[in-house]
Image (cartoon, rainbow over all chains, first blue to last red; front, top):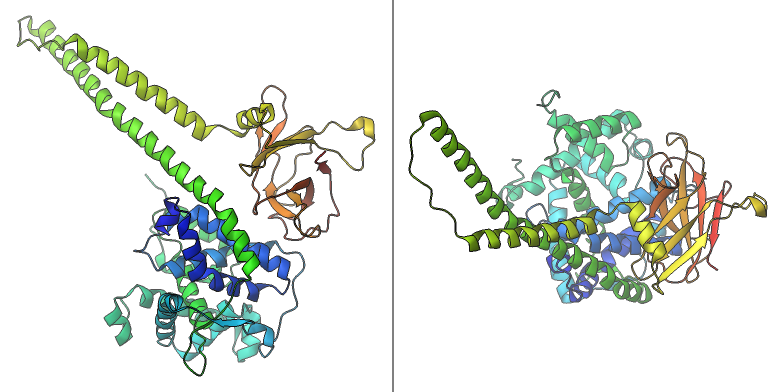
Amino acid sequence: MQRVAAGDPAAVNEILDRYGGLVWSIARRMSVDPAEVEDAVQEIFIDLWRNAARFDAACGSEAAFIVTLARRRLVDRHRKRVRRAPMASLDDGRLEPAGKREAGVEDRSELAEEAERARDTMNQLKPDERRVLELAVYHGLSQNEIADEMSLPLGTVKTHSRRGLIRLRELLGAPPREQARGGAR
Amino acid sequence: MSSYPPLDEARLLELLADQATGSLTPVDQAELCQLLEQAPAFDADVIERAAAAVELAMLAGGETAAGEYLLEEMPAALRRKIADEAPSYIRDNASARSTAALLAAAKAVSAPVLDRVLRDQAADVTTAGEIDVAAKPGPQKKPLPVRFWWALAAALLVASGLLIKLQSAMEDGPVSSYKQMIASDSADVIRADWVDPAAPEDKQSHGNVVWNNREQRGYMRFHGLAVNDPTREQYQLWIFDKTRDERYPVDGGVFDMAAAEQDPETGDTIVPIRATLPIRDLAMFAVTIEQPGGVVVSSRARLPLLAKIP
């Protein structure tokens, strides 16, 4: 990202190699309309090129920076949407990534490590907190929909969602050894 | 001195968590804005990064039975398009950085010189005061050589000229930028007049739009467009690109007439265009009236102005 910020065009292909599939996959889950997904992905990358200088490795990984930016742009588009695509059920195949591929070794070492660390961190949450976050963040369900899905009171869903994210933030900010013990700062 | 109470960080984190899961109410949103305003140094992305970790864990965590890492692939055509268009945005970064660096350099050149002049002036005042009051000669300051004053004048001239040029380039408002662009004879600049589809031909005087295709930026000039109430509705610009599906024009952003800059000479309103996607082959601009915040897909039910590229 520093090279993109410095105006190095060669860095573009490296970013696309490493994170193109990730951004595409996130955007694909937000819409079933291919034109809409393509526009969203283009917008995200333009945002990325323009905001590359904001990346600070001390605050988080490159992947987290890109996903944060992608999510923000997609949420913004979602808010502006007039018509909403029908909500797919959790058993619907559309929720699963289509056209999977095996990524290159380099991609794997970068993103897989990041994903593994994220999964380890998620596993330190209470099961209900983890499930609420999966449904809210990954599947994009509203808190009412999660309450129905998990047969929990709405207030409990809200509490799990808040506590889960705040705890996750603490764990992600903790040194690796502390993370392994599951301790918060 | 701030009049805010001590920051409630726990509450701020709760609200950021609600924002990350899309469950923030308008009242909470206002509270969040207030808390963030209270703590400008607070990293407002901390919770979003936690949500990003959830995405990564779920999406990039899939593995085959053989333990291979799986991820959906971006279509090759889209990837090529993004890679092809990236250099213009990357160049913008480099250009902004070099301009900022030049500005900093100019300030760095002028600051020590000005500092020295000010210190010398202060010393002169102090010395003069001492002489006046005590009426006795003090140690004489060694006069500065003439070449120093020439060097000082030259440095100030260069630095101030550089600063003025750079700052004006960076801070040109929409009105002057619009005037420069509309007067440009560049082949990249495209102009079109606004037309109200509901008005007769002899009542068409609504302003115009100018777009620089190479720079991917432009300005709209509006004459007599009604002032909107941003809490009820906003104007939204759409840019039709011949290379894209006509049903999905590019979002050019929302704008409010009252907040836009006015040309003091004509009273017309000038609004910069912020295209969210690259425009390759411009066909038409359209302004619609939408709900606050705009929409992704317009019903085009209220379409006060169109500007077709001749």
